Image (cartoon, rainbow, N blue to C red; front, side, top):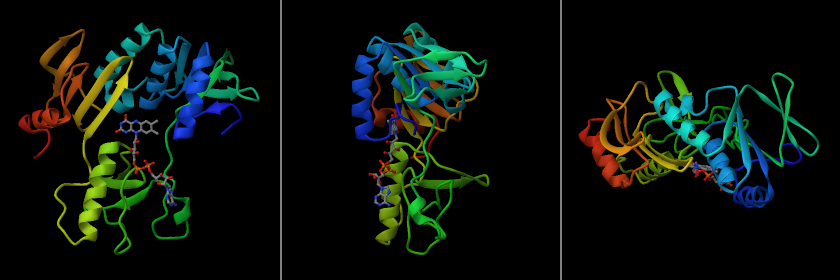
Length: 261
Ligand SMILES: Cc1cc2nc3c(=O)[nH]c(=O)nc-3n(C[C@H](O)[C@H](O)[C@H](O)COP(=O)(O)OP(=O)(O)OC[C@H]3O[C@@H](n4cnc5c(N)ncnc54)[C@H](O)[C@@H]3O)c2cc1C
């Protein structure tokens, strides 16, 4: 971390960030993922002019084109601007970013939201060490007998590729499965729980199913302006900007055959 660079990983980071954002009239956010857009939303709401920089189209890799497009449009309405391209920190302490064309955007606060790394360094030298996370099977077991893993640090192999799903619902599901294993019980469900929520640009997103979403949705309930209960056949059901309880949304997903009970 460079001096003056802000991140959001711990409660202390959140407290420091809040103090900086309340005094900042300009903010640059590096990274246009969920966290970057959540921070940008908060900063814009606090009255700052906000610019988000990312080489990739905002939110698209995570949500797919349709949802990403809709949410970015809302973010633009909220006054957030976007720059495509890599950003390099400038200043000591950090006071802005340099874009690929050499131009510099100065800001009172620069927040890096560029992803997370599993805190598994303490496992170096063991069979569990891997930069991709600790591999678990469908019962949260690692390669070492009697050792389980759960949460952001755990990685599941799908189609030969190890991937982590660093979301709250997965951490809970994997914790339960691991606990069942330790107690010698059969787990009641799998280690991946496809439920995700976020609040971006004033719109709440709740999704049950696998992201990112390909293609366009069917509108099951129209909330106006693109919001509503949206279904992507065989992929996910999303409550976008409308009230829907999580159990209800899970039931919707079951009825649509997206997830099994
Ligand atoms: C700013 C932010 C916003 C988020 N927003 C969302 C969201 O909207 N929706 C969502 O689904 N998820 C969200 N997440 C992700 C969610 O918080 C995580 O998926 C969840 O907290 C994972 O739980 P965990 O127990 O695996 O890890 P953590 O909550 O990170 O807990 C791990 C704990 O282990 C401790 N630890 C690490 N190493 C050791 C060690 N060697 N010995 C002992 N203890 C150790 C750490 O100090 C920490 O307390 C967000 C995360 C952040 C940071």
